[in-house]
Length: 95
Ligand SMILES: [Zn+2]
Image 1 (cartoon, protein in one colour):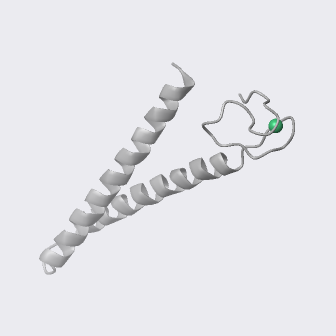
Image 2: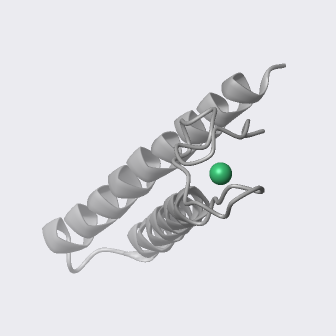
Image 3: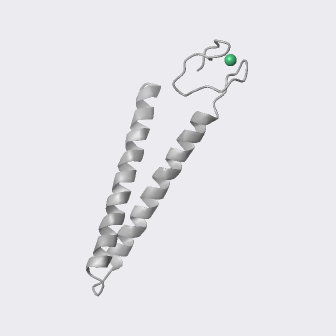
């Protein structure tokens, strides 16, 4: 499996997590608002699950973004974009 594919899979998983989180949270909230007198345990569980999914996906996105920002050239120390193959300053190959 190539590095690019595993990155794509990771991104797809984060997006899936995010969508599932929003759906669970939305459904849970709608359930509680819609039926305030009935048993709300299922909706509370859904809200908790949705919040956890949302939070973990957001944390993963933040970590991914931080990694992107903190990449530097090993030769000259220039800040490098994730998609760059060579250093824009000295031309050193980025691995
Ligand atoms: Zn450099």
